[in-house]
Length: 317
Image (cartoon, rainbow, N blue to C red; front, side):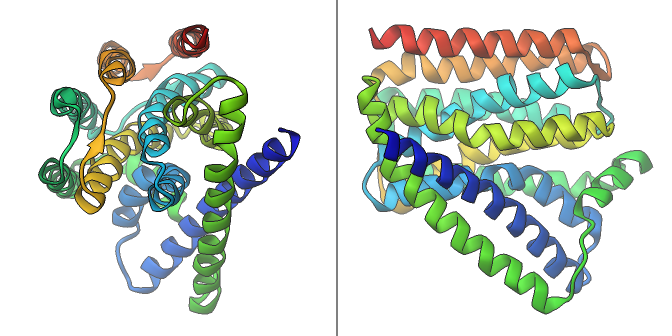
């Protein structure tokens, strides 16, 4: 058990370092190709926080543990909103000026509801997975088309996020190092978390839903707190909402499209997926009521997340 915990923690560290290295390397390479920095930022803001989850899910699917991958994808969305966004807003009120956030939240709600409906027959089919991938491509295109509508303050904030140094060689090394870190980190997490979960009475689905999702969210939450204190509220909210859309449409959709039908237990459709929808629904009044996510609202999100974790552990008994 202690060995499993040690390798899991080391794996989570590798995932955090690998994700950071890949973001810097990808930003540097894109700038070298003279892609506009704001366009790079729009992609990286949404994708950056999903890289550890994507690596874990890819290794889980490759090893045949699709239940862990499913649990991680949905659990990460709950952790994104409840833990990451909650802690960030609790650290400092988040000023939100990114006009695309509300449409992206609407997409997240529709995508979560869509996954619930598609899973009523017991799983996500290959055709449904392909449809989810097409939907994700549409979201990316929509976000790109709206880029010119953003305020100078938002553009400056996103540009600062993608700022990186180093020439072609250094950025290629960053990407290569990131690939190694993500590969080994994800491998250790996929191999060891089920061992810990079994000791706690969890199957792979619940282990991915709770243990992996929280573990991969902790470095993101720490980074979000730092960003919140720097006044980068748009970056934090963009990470959370964009990453959640990414997890549902690209990660789950890719699993079904590439690997065939993804089984979804009826209990998961009745509880965990509706909980993910409710967490996204919590953001509607928070984003529409004002342009600032207050400390009190962050505390509400964090309390809801803690209640969900307690519920999941209570159900184990």
